[in-house]
Length: 490
Ligand code: SAH
Image 1 (spheres, protein in one colour):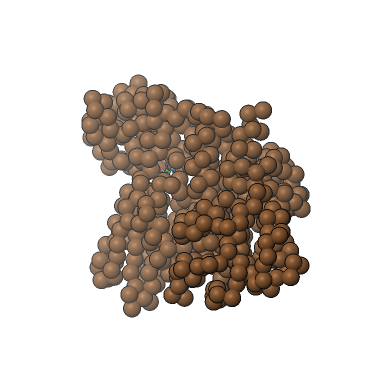
Image 2 (cartoon, helix red, strand yellow):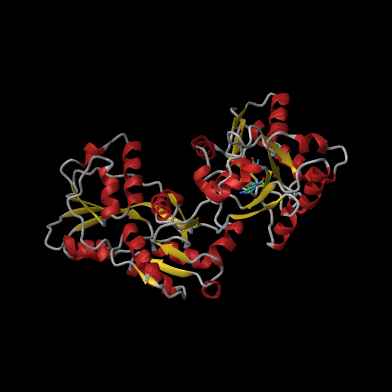
């Protein structure tokens, strides 16, 4: 029995701000007890067999009482499982992680803490507010705004605190907080800011003075999650606040690929100034496939970067490596698959000009093939297989993985539907995305425009009732981004 508990901080919301150890721990878990305020893609790193339990609190009310969460945590750990207790931000900052660690300590259950990036530093940072700054603030205090009604709280001491105050929780209590601070001597003119949904799509910043911040926040409809910052450092947001620049500035773009594939697209979009919303519509599951002896084949066809990844994983598991491909001709469907292959030290022999199945069929015309192995997704199209068979080849299909629908996270719904564009790099992502948001009519009503990587993806989108606004001329992720830039510019 090697049961244990890992208290993991998942950061403030942007999946890019999870630590490497957090992602590893999520992958190790047999059971994940997760809160509501975690990055949308955090759970996609879980082991396919892991049990995911939502113990999140909605609003102020407790959905799952703390005692029950603790009971689940202990039960599973005692049964020999690796339990990840996944929390937003840092587990020890207003996260009750300390209590859960103490409990493990008292009961002799091994535990580990994985610190996370806390909202009280990250949200102000992305609003251009450093919480400490030479000559302006040499200290910072993290405070819960929930204590506003608490007569016992030492408001005098807090008002005199020589540095920045960062309030977590209690956006509704801001008026009381400000009044008490001012009553205890803090200057009513001191700069203050509220950062709502910090680091997330739709991050929203309100700045005002201490005596007017609550009213300003209310006028603008600020809601949880938000942190409030009080101190002169707030003024730096005028200079350091992000000014979006680039061809996709002021454009919000939904990326529907799996996190594994989306990071490259996301990075490029961000470099171009876009606000990127990761909303994976598909998840990928590896299948129990075994790579046959490759000697009898004279052609290997790989149709996606995922195919390459799983092919070599299976090869390795059976005790082989790239040398097993010696002498074999390799055809790939496009430059992305070619790049994935090069990571294994192999150069494809055949890369079609048009990166779609039909392009590969054209590239293979005239190539003599006797026995071909086509390694691909279970649900892939058969164009290449059919064409090879028609040309007289003996074709074996190796289904390495399958794609399935991924649910749209509830707190992603609003940012996704109020975005400008959604990008689709595969037919399955297109189909599953339309279903996940509730159908074509929902998309039409939202004004979200769609861009696809090529004709197959467009066809899938049309079949689901959505007319793509843009189709990439070059059927690669870069081609898709270029098509989007052209469209936005005109
Ligand atoms: N352990 C978390 C805090 C949990 S308490 C951490 O270290 O960040 C929950 C409070 O955190 C929210 O009420 C809000 O004040 C703050 N918070 C969490 N995520 C936030 C975000 N993305 N933007 C602004 N505030 C956030």
